Length: 466
Length: 52
Image 1: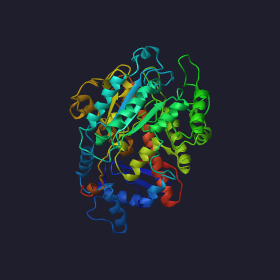
Image 2: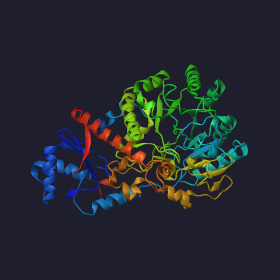
Image 3: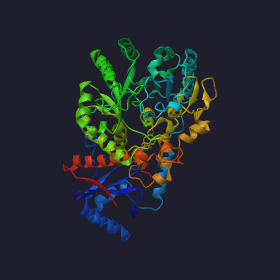
Image 4: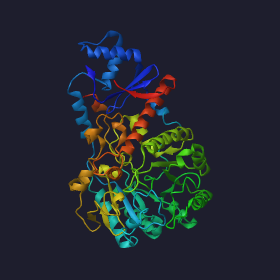
């Protein structure tokens, strides 16, 4: 018997949590018992120590202790066998590659004058949109029918509200085709927008069309939003607030997409007040990414990760859904490996650019890297396509350098584009180290929080050597 | 000791299942916005762990 190579230890006061990063069930015991077990394992026992039989059985059950040299290999192979094959379920419609803003952290490149010139100038036409609808349906119908599946259409940009007419057209078209295409039964729509072009009419219409609205904002005041600027460099926070006020007055629910700037993470209370003021039921915090010119610092990554956890603790009391933590929490509580944090890295998405070119990641919209398909191409199959196959294996489960990480099971990897931008010489297979910090801090929080629930004790959680 | 189902559930606080107003891709600067695991069915693995 010995500890699995995927086993990690966390100190919690006088107790310890042992956790296999792939089996994902923490076991808590006193440090005293842990020391006895550890010594026992080092003496290569033939049988289980009677007094610790119950603990050891539990540790074996959750693969924290393994009884056979081969088990670790079997565990990894088993988990890898569950990585889904590429199969499209999410479709981005880039209604317009143009944007009325030039946010300074924009990962698409709208913050960069040269990159802005690379975007397609015309809005998506009805013809392209119609072909895009058919294309997505074809992709959905490549797969065996599953009535529980929820295909997702995301209206994106640039700024998608620059082309509202086509959004309306696309949704109506999908709805018409539901009768003849059962794969569309559970289709969901959402829009990610800076909100500035929302009007009463558009809000009403989005609500009628059942398009979930995510408005981007960076915090609760002008200072926190100073990176959210228009093309002349003026901040726009006050205008965003007007739109939030409008939505609230019309009882149109919106969610928030909040990119955490250095300023916005300084004031948790102000952030909470903004969320409560607009009766926000769901939001997602985003940790800024590096680009070719700007590298985000480790201290910021740590602060942002901690901010997200602190906010989650408050938001869950209020019943407010914060997506960044919830996706990891769901993985942790169900002990279900979280293979990909991004649909692109599981080969599950297509991005239809405004001119009908199709790629795998909207982060590559400017330079059109990985945009090798087109809405007129009828024989695309992601299972047979080298780009989709390559991207679908970007899970940390596949990476040698991730095997020793305690957060392996809940991570999902980060953004391959950020990985490319983090360091010279990186490629999409490199690690998004910004995400490592977030995943590890989330795991430590889950382990210590669960310990508090079980034991009633609140202890600082610290990873230690086995 | 390990947690019970109810104890795991307490980690969610008062958060109910996914809110209908929550956009699936709630971000502008991506940061891995779309959670493919919540959009696609990943096979349950519990029973099979017992065999390993």
